[in-house]
Amino acid sequence: MQIRAAVLDRPGAPFTIETLDLDAPRQGEVLVRIVAAGVCHSDLHVAKGLVKEPLPTVLGHEGSGVIEAVGPGVASVRAGQKVVLSWVRGCGTCRHCARGRVHLCVEGIIDGTLPAGGTRLRRGTQAVYHYGATSCFATHAVIPETMVVPVGPATDLEIAALVGCAVTTGVGAVIHTAQVPPGSTAAVIGCGGVGLSIIQGLRLAGARQIVAVDAGAGKIEAARASGATHAVDISSAEPIAAVLGLTDGGAEYVFEAVGLPQTVQQAVAMTAVAGATVIVGLPPDGSRLEIGLDHLWRGERRILTSIYGSSSPRFDFPRLLELEAAGRLDLRSLIRRRYPLSAINQAYADLEAGAPGRGLLTMEGI
Figure (cartoon, helix red, strand yellow):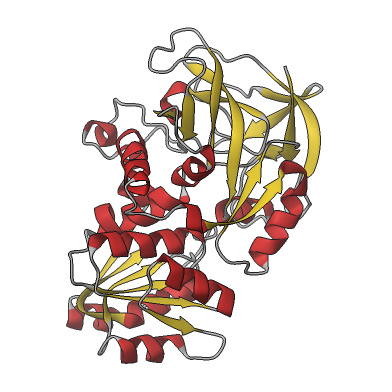
């Protein structure tokens, strides 16, 4: 079939909206009509060349849609079901999957192809690569059965799209990776979609003090709306001194949601004795970190890293949506901007400019 998709040909180039050929799903694959896709920094890293991927490619890893067809051997989902896309495969047989650590599955998708081999996207005779085996910046995608999670027929697919990455990453970092207990103090550096989800996770966990750290009134307002009790605007305050002052010498849990060495260093400096720094942001390829070991050792400070919120998508996606339905998470408030797919370059320009909250691409009207 022919689809419309946003194609990236080279780092630094704008996305181009093109008609591509999409092959039918093979063994263990499904065809999904994409409804919504989140505008995430991870895709921007690839677009700017900070993370290397084979090109040309169709990006997009945070999405939702409806299954239109299934390939041979597919048994867990059927045509007509609403689904959230997961960017971890979860082979089910490796040692990590066997121990419930699906997010660390050794059969990750890293080379632009699908697990069954090759690509399903073509531009004439030229292969176009998949990103994270999801490639949801398109009207349709062929995706492995193990990477779609069915949700209820009444599910709002705009909210569900964010569960595919930002919400699971952020809330999971609090609940699964750090296991923050009630009454804790915390700080969050970077209040984009993931950072706001961390703040909501901290509120869910019962943290008594949540300090949001970012630049600009819009980011600060969004952080407070998500549950931050205090805020530090780095455009007018030195962040380390400000957080140390607000938390009586350091926060017990400091979450870094940017992915840069300098912000990780700041996070470590803000962490209290016996506290934990949790690195959640995606670092550019080749990033290196220099920290004072004496600062860690003398205070028994820990550094944790969190991939996909240490979550299991098939378990956690439905649970997060249930928490939203029960009013314990406010995921709709994260969506601040909606764009047609044709406006993807504007969506990413707004993201780079620091627009608060999450932007969402919708496929209606293209």
